[in-house]
Length: 201
Picture 1 (cartoon, one colour):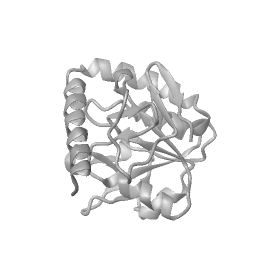
Picture 2 (cartoon, one colour):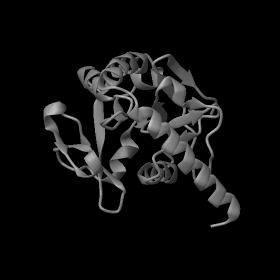
Picture 3 (cartoon, helix red, strand yellow):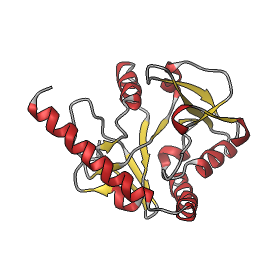
Picture 4 (cartoon, one colour):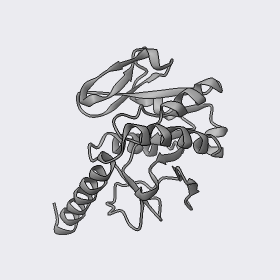
């Protein structure tokens, strides 16, 4: 690892710690209220309003809540795909069939109990909701550092697929600058309780 890359990785780790500490201060009530507001704002995004298939994820802990949004999308007849974490940190996918079909999985995650569709199923998505900790004015996203979504984004790029990339965050997680590396992809839009913001492609 060269010095520049090492410095960026260290800066990312430091920013992650800071943002996760801020999330830890939120109450369950704060998180629940925010989830409802986020769902309403996200559903107004044309990228989601016009999507037939959305690859999403189930929020856990103090992550900006996705569950109200998952239900709203499913209620509209949208096909929602949820990730299934594989042993090598890559992601398989399965269809979301409602909260009663979610099972506890490793790392505190919840995964759908339906048939696995394969890692390439994400290529069918018109929009992909990416988990994140921050985004900056250029649309660069800071993930949790596990690399699972880097693989998803690389898979999309290799296949020439260009779904809309959307991240849900709290208002104070839109920051001045996210340290970025060559493999990082900018997102197309961020949704916070204050509303949605789009980034130039």
